[in-house]
Length: 261
Image (cartoon, rainbow, N blue to C red; front, side, top):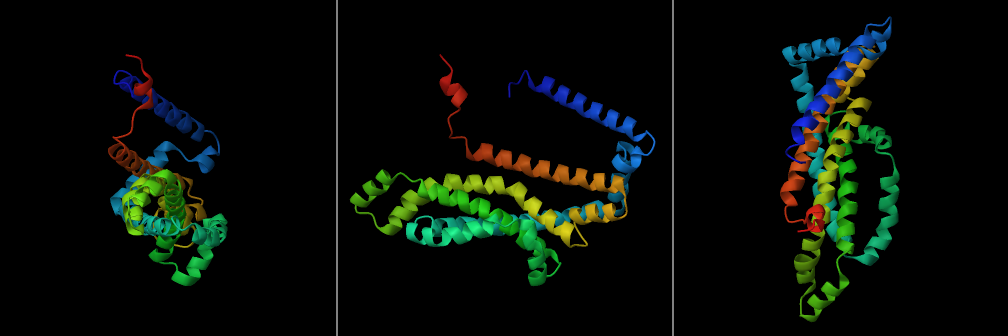
């Protein structure tokens, strides 16, 4: 973003945010509307209450733990499976229909089965997040492996390389960029998997706060939990963008490359 435009864009964003809050507060004053949309002031009070008694820190830390656990397990499993299955075309043709079939199942539909297998504790949410992350990373890794230039592989074969050399010196470096892209994309989905598990069966976490407040018709509590979830997702996306910039410094800026001298 242009340095001269940054302050102006920030000012417009702040103005839009304040306008939304003002309109929201005004609408909540109408008869009966506070029950449906609460109000920014009530939500602010609830956030302060949760901060004061430790509720917010406790439940947020649980959701972060589930998210990070599911992300790490799913990313590692997805990369390993992608590098194992990707180079073996025949094996891929055998297992691809089964993998796609499992991937096509909505992850929320797997939650009841995971409850039977892992109970309602933290591991159920971690596994649900793991499954969500796994397929994203796996498919990106496989695509990277299978898109390696065959002429490059043939040239390495002609130079007397072994299968191990081809895998480690050609396929892995070429596919690593796609694998890392899948890893970056999957971070927010790990949060989604963890929260979905909490919404279905849990007594801890941000998802639990949402379901608990909804069951008591506490609209302010629902919005307060959603705002915390939004902030957490924003932080995760900011981390993703930061990592993306740090790992993509070698890429050519298309706008700069097309700009005349």
